[in-house]
Amino acid sequence: MERLSYIDEHARSVDANRDRAWKAVLQVVCKNPADPSTAPSGFVLDSAAAPARLALKGRHWFSEYALIFELDDEGPSRTRVRAKSLANFPGLHGKIYRALVIGTGAHKFVVRGMLRRIAAAA
Image (tube, rainbow, N blue to C red):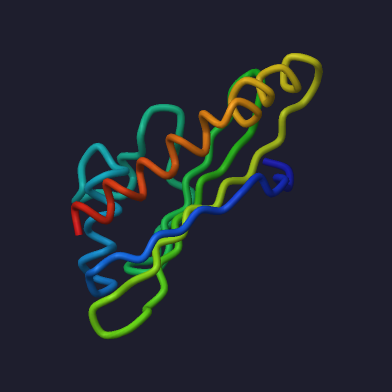
């Protein structure tokens, strides 16, 4: 996979220590919370470093992409969960796909929803 372009980053503070927040990330993102390699459809596990970083990647005809969750301590029982998106959208079809996914705000809506679910799960 070639170097991907930065798309955006969203973050949310979670009322949980990093270990609990990590478990919440896996619960929301993975098909099997006990196994980070069970990434959602369209993604494969790129790397997992508990309880700090979960990196997923994927590709299809219109784009190559990555979604990276990073967890930072904000205190003894508070964690900042960040979701960073990277992607390339090659060609005309990629440009159209980017407009539909990123340009409409759908991507932002989905990522922020994931962060809300992570905060609730923690």
